[in-house]
Image (cartoon, rainbow, N blue to C red):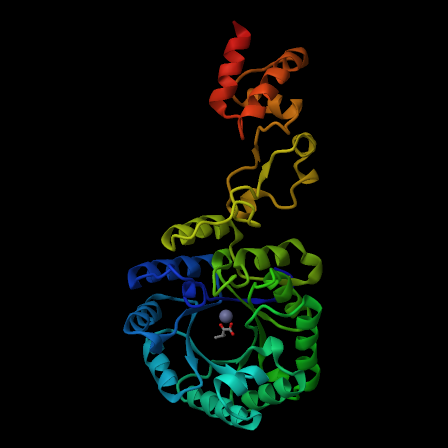
Length: 384
Ligand code: KIV
Ligand code: ZN
């Protein structure tokens, strides 16, 4: 396949599971991890092992089970966190320790009551310690979105020197605009001397609804990894939705990037995640929402029935969705009515449709959606 690879780092089981009410047990997490490996994620963040015995156990079971995917565990830049993460991950074929610390002045002052120089020292020590367990160490500069670029570049250069191989630049609060996030990546590419020894990663939250746009902008600025979750689950307004960034890169092949994701599993896995986490997906959600491939206005339905591409940029089959739907409402036109009747086995001529249409509209004005049964009733009454 052509294009530069963008690695997909799935954090549904870590950042996604931080959603209130989305708690999963080890068995559920393991089942989901296996599905995410089938989906083709390159790195799977299985949890935060030091946070609870249950999370340790889940990360450990996932580490024992996955065959190809790199299994990752989160830790703060704290010795015990890193050692516990390493122990939980040890059985994995390939594992990554994800460690880091807040780098914005707000975090440095209020969370750590420290200085910028002290934070750099703590970051270096954490990365060096993690490197004793694996040569795959990712460093996160929490709140990088609001971190001064010149200081961020110093932190990143220092942790690469200490052995970090992936640099996560989180827009922790979902504050950045796409052009700012892209510029931040570009700044790091141009100002961190040893940047060629590591991969930059996007980790964008959705507080302003910009997580997907920011992640794509980050890639355009030089990042080669996107951290994301199924259905965009995550803290507060959520993370970048995996299905969205994957399909943006897939649809815009002109950008020149590819991922390893099997797009046909996007809808099935979205439904599984929604069910297991008891978190419904909004109907108008891109790619995986119930209405993502539904057409309800007459103008759209007419165009779609003539040629699907007039109103659909993605073939639903490509993302494992059910076939496109023509929904009959009071906004539908004659062609949609004829199409749906035809599907039910009634091959009416144009004149018949002209007679049926006002009857249909009367019903549609009373109901949100005209169902199969309603249509059969209208057709039967008409034939009598
Ligand atoms: O949003 C964030 O900054 C995070 C880090 C822990 C990677 O989730
Ligand atoms: Zn996050």
